[in-house]
Length: 154
Picture 1 (spheres, rainbow, N blue to C red):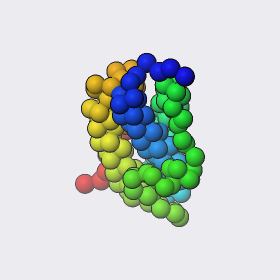
Picture 2: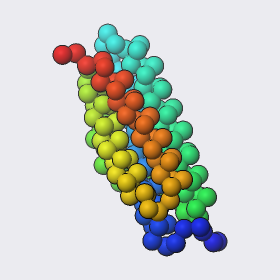
Picture 3: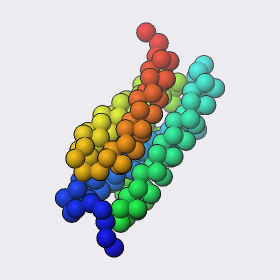
Picture 4: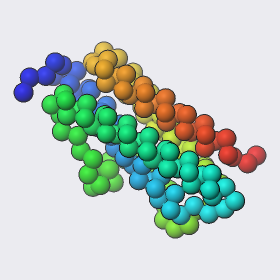
């Protein structure tokens, strides 16, 4: 298969796409974990917001995985891969208070956003179409972090 990118550009772009895929899938899984175990007075609002975050993360993951496939790469979204390579903090098991969910999810979103911004910079000279997709994902993650931060008390 012939690709439009040279080997170096494809390697950098592929690394950015795979890293973004792992972060986004981990966010979606941990968002569901929080969604199912959330307790407290902000339950309903956060329950619904977590669903929105999960949906956005899954949509961007799918878009980026399909971009990787279009470039001739093999995206890896297996649970084993995510568990073994995601640097995002773990929300943990069991019931989780609304304020802990706010803090933990905000932290995850901010860390994922920072990593996305680095990927945007990394792809500046390799593939502008991928960079545009990463910018879009970053914009949505930063917006979600703002939404969750806005619920903090104090």
